[in-house]
Length: 261
Image 1 (cartoon, rainbow, N blue to C red):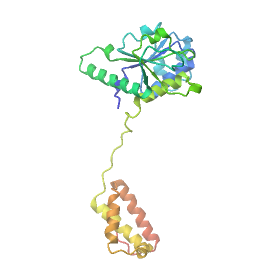
Image 2 (cartoon, rainbow, N blue to C red; image 1 turned 135 degrees about the horizontal axis):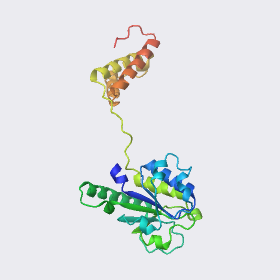
Image 3 (tube, rainbow, N blue to C red; image 1 turned 60 degrees about the vertical axis):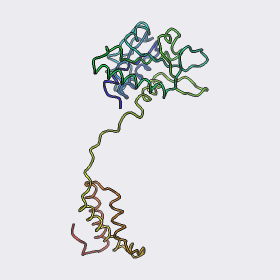
Image 4 (tube, rainbow, N blue to C red; image 1 turned 90 degrees about the vertical axis):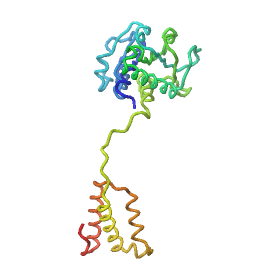
């Protein structure tokens, strides 16, 4: 998974954003996926820090940095990646798929963090900038000229342009997709052999009392049931529950001489 140090290397740069709500939505997406550094270049609306769309991301908006040009916004980054819908424009940069681009960005974030940890590289050499253009025109050619390569979200030709906030969310999700681990869960200790045997005995009692084994007579039925229960690999906390369930079933079936467990 991406560590906090690796996430900290990314700078999301919004160039000439027209709607402050889109800046708020982008900040919210950043907060959702663990990215904290937002930079805005010549936003059309100066009051973007008050955007109501930044639910839960007020800290990202509050720390957002403003720049007068894309060149200034990416000056301290060693890798600059632009996003584009392509349309009919002629590109002078390598164009990568979203999946491939995200993989390369992750690699740079990780290598940069390792170099910083070893104090072999200044902070600027480990930062990556991800640029998004205005909602109407995208990134201008001058903005693109500062990029090392570009990547594109594979939208359909009938409606190729995405909302800015959505585009940021999709790109950031691709960066962390498949690399975040599931929330840590404490593993329960496995049930002991004695606990499993008590469950097996009680289950066999329930099967005999219900007539199940009479309908399926086999010489080694006890051994088969024992192997079946052990394949379940029950944790200790579940063993207690199953034992109680089978005990109740046997009692309901009217067995008075069920073994004590």
